[in-house]
Length: 335
View 1 (cartoon, rainbow, N blue to C red):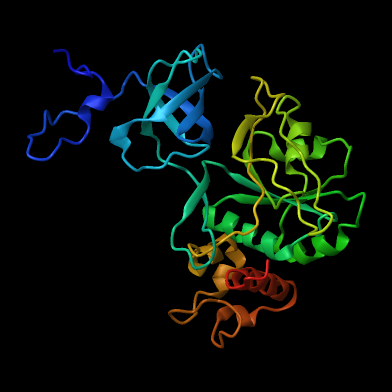
View 2: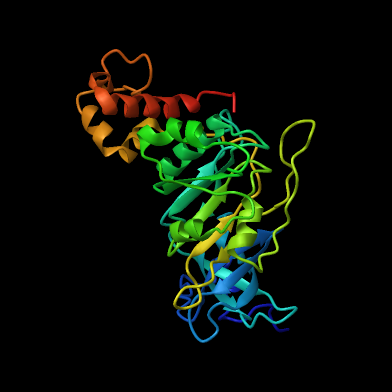
């Protein structure tokens, strides 16, 4: 009777059942595995784009191989595929290797949830999309997204939409001491300035529902066809339109790709239970120097009598105040 897998199939190397001896100590090297990047995940099926070779850019549907166990695979992961990588209808490749991640954007469901959830891997820029009106901006949520970006080692970019409905000056003033870069857009206007900020980068777009993320994505990638929705007139909150994260190549580069964007579902909360204040201070080199003589266990937050940040003056004192506001956002449920 012929076995289900041959000796070269990765599935044949699964963990042996009880009371059996391992078949072999040798493990496959996957030298012939095909590099790809995961662009969306849907109920255990992962859509990947081949990243090398004559078929680079082709879509392949894949599933995670059992030897990977419970290792999660998310949008942005660099992976290796074996099996049928033709991308033809009805075919299914297998992900056998997940390359080490450069960055991981994480959040928890809330601040009491110990379970971290990786949203996107290997992105280098977090674009925090906020509407200036309809719906009203939520600074607490912006603060929390900034904390997540700094914690992940990603560069933040504040993207303010619907400037035809409200003046951005007051909101920008809140984040000016932190030096957060920003771009302002209005409905129906050219998105060239946004495109310049995204060029050559892998950017994740986050924001609560109704702020215009999907509209922005459709303007940047005309064939994306992301669903858009209106704001609920009763609650003032947006309706969810995107239901899963999707990674898209930006058109227009020398090789047809000017960078990547990841559109994510609208968020109502951004838990930060996983964030350590000592990691957050590393994102602000000038402020970190002031904490060199802080006592052990200093959180650098409000109410720390011996914190070195208390010695800041002038513009630096404004940065300290803004930094401490970000720290305090970790403990606030009002967002």
